[in-house]
Image 1 (cartoon, rainbow, N blue to C red):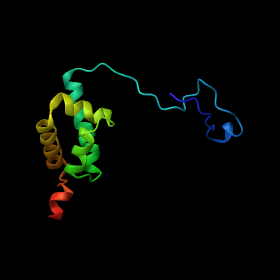
Image 2: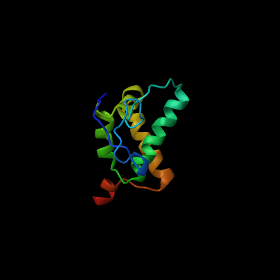
Image 3: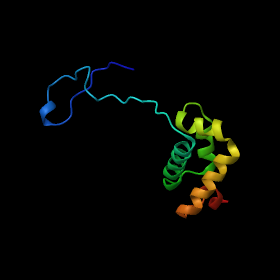
Image 4: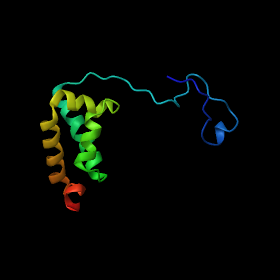
Length: 104
């Protein structure tokens, strides 16, 4: 967690330094989840990227990368076949074919 000073936003904050307890810093908080919530989280991630036009090849790179923690934990817990099926199901649901497959 960094402690870099951040400027205040809006007219009231003009010229005011950020205070240590100001909520200007992005902080991740672990939340206990069950399997149903975990799968819904996975569907939400898939929907976001598919609807933004990402190809399956690019998405699989993200899922495999430990630097994308949310996606990577899904990949580790469910496996590549499950993730690929999720992407295919999401593409059908939203009518968004894989742009890389269309380019061929």
